[in-house]
Length: 287
Image (tube, rainbow, N blue to C red; front, side):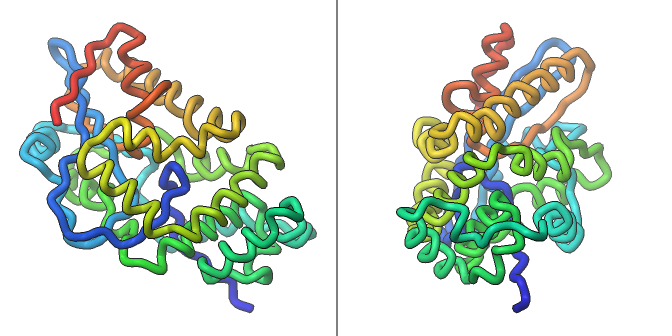
């Protein structure tokens, strides 16, 4: 059976990509700066439906003023990104996907797979973390939001002719999952199956929080990632700490930088914003 390789936006909180109404959004934007350096921090959703206007006057001014864009990962051709995923995701000789979760969770897994349009034949040859991401992507792509409509492609076009960098590589981002302990990968798989069954409502909550710039509500959307210590450390805490260090280092050089990362990294305990403030930097919210 042909395996259904889907676009895998790394949306924090295992959010899926259901449809949201056309709207004018007001996402949160922060600024940190000194005499010769300004860095804006903008929280994104990696997949959006068509027709969302998120470039408020404050955001548009920051984009226009910046000379450099920094994303989570470099822009890439979707086909190349899928090929990279496949190369790391497949592994022969694995146990059947159902055998990797407790007996009590197998019905939940089956329901999530069905919603995502995935069969055991599709997932048995994938590592557990990759099966989780495939279920997440499959549930989301049943609706109308997509990475092509997300913030990052728009920013990449807006910064054409300017410098564009990244905090991570695509390989490094996938290997965050690949290095998770087996138990954590199984937690991720079951959570993906649970979320797939209510994908539309989960995305609606995320979209509403992001569009309103509601920090508390955004932090709540990533709470599932914090329940497992290994997942929370690898996907949130360690990355936030690395990114905060990179931003502090960038402050030592003159320039105007627009940093766009998943909104979950900028809110709540241990966020990039909190870590920068803990290091003595003045971070002000400007939108």
